[in-house]
Every structure is written in C-alpha cells, then in structure tokens.
Image (cartoon, rainbow, N blue to C red; front, side, top):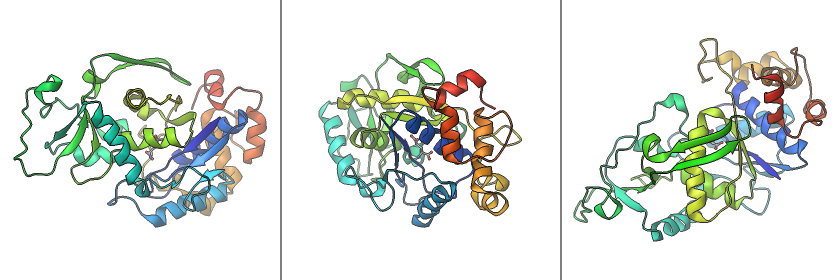
Length: 313
Ligand code: GLU
C-alpha cells in the first residue's frame, strides 16, 4: 500500500495542505503502507523551487517525513518533480495518440488552467468540442495549414464513469456532460495535470490517492485515462476541504492559516492537533504528535473510516 502527497509549489503550505498531508500519511501508515512526496511543478510560471523547499521544510517541522520522493529524489521511481518528467509524459501521450482519440485544438480558452489541478472554486468550463475532428464525431476539419501551435485534447466518451470513493461512497460522472474533451498538453508545450498525475501515480506505484474533495470530478477523468493506458486505478479518497470563515477554500489570503503564521505562533503538535480536530479524529483541540495520532487511528482500517464515524468539521 502506498499513499502520496502531491503539492504544487506555487506558495507556502496552509492548514488545508497540512490536513491532507496528515490524513494521507495517517491513512497509509495505519494500513502498514508507505508515503510518497511528489512535487507538482508543471507550470513554470507558478512553480518556484524555493516553495518546494519550504514545503519540505514545513513537512519536516511537522514531523511528516516521506519515505520516497521529494526534491532529492529518494527512491527508484524518480524523478519525483514533474518538471523533470517530460520525456515520460511524451511517451504516454504517444500511446494515447495511437488509440486515435487525441486531436489538436487551437482554442485558447481554458488552456491556461490545464496544468493546474481543477479545484472546483476555480470555475471550470466544459469544452464543447469545437476542434474535434469529424472522424471522432465532431464537425471540425483538421487543417494542417493553421500555423498557430495546437494543444492536444483527449476525446471523451458518452458513458458513466463509476467508482467508489473512500469517503464519498459510490460516484458516477459522465465526462461528455461534465467536462468535455480535456487537454493533455497545452499549446505552449506544458503538460496537463490530468495526464501527469495519472502517469506518475501509476508509475510510482501509488495505490491510494487521498486529497481534497474539490478534485472528485478529476478522479473520473483520471480513471478514464487509467483505462486507456491499461493501468489499474488507485483507490480514491476525497476528504472535505478546510474552509475559511466565509466557507471558502483556504488561500494565501488567509494568513493566520498559513504555515508562516502557524509556525510563529504554535508548536508542530498544536498544528497537527488543529488539523486532527477538524477531521474529527479528536473531539477537543489538543496538541498531538504524528505517532500519537497514528495510535488513535490504528484501530480504524484507514483514516477515512474516521470521517464516517465522526463526521468532518
Ligand atoms: N498538485 C495538486 C494540488 O496541489 C494536487 C493534485 C492531486 O492530489 O491529485 O492542487
């Protein structure tokens, strides 16, 4: 069993990231598994090496050490930073192209977002298939003469993708209605999150993907890719997000929830205790180390079992 934490180094961690990191490591360790750290620095404009360093430093400070991965590429499935895995993504894009289900797209809308994990609050648009060629059931005719660089899209099918989420239970999504053909590579050559995350989780042997529930729909896109590439999909566990006072996903604006503030005003045990309290692992907020928390969940099959028994805050 292998869990993972896959942060994008676009800024410093906040309590929301601590919470998913803590839960995925608790879930992995309570099942006798290991925990991997992957740096999701696909977007050169948003990703900074210094942020990745800070993420590692914050995880160290919290006592959440990873068994595999990280900036120094510990393990044999590396490199563990997505910016250094282009050749691998290229090979898998070729495989998908060989299925005849990809096509070039010169629409500009939504492309910018492709490298990022599509968190619900980012307001995604459903792609209507404007560039989908006739051979794939669309109206567009492929014009080689168009000199603008093209993105590569994957044609989705009109079927329900069903899976059982570890927290949310049975799920069913129709990609045609809810996403549309999605991008695998942007026109500027940047790899899309959906392709990279599937290839990486599969090649790195990840068996449990635990992350925020605003990526629930992405699991359906990813399962579709797993099938096309002939990989077995991992178990998905989507946990409720930590929200700010206005009920929105935490962002850099919520400074008191940011690691810089938290480290100045609290001990690591206090921060872990805060995160654990929000998950419902403990009923009253109190400082606890990772091993103490692990002991608390060890009677459960996995950390997500705790959601069902106590309900997330
Ligand atoms: N890198 C993504 C993010 O930080 C997480 C993706 C995932 O866990 O699949 O939003």
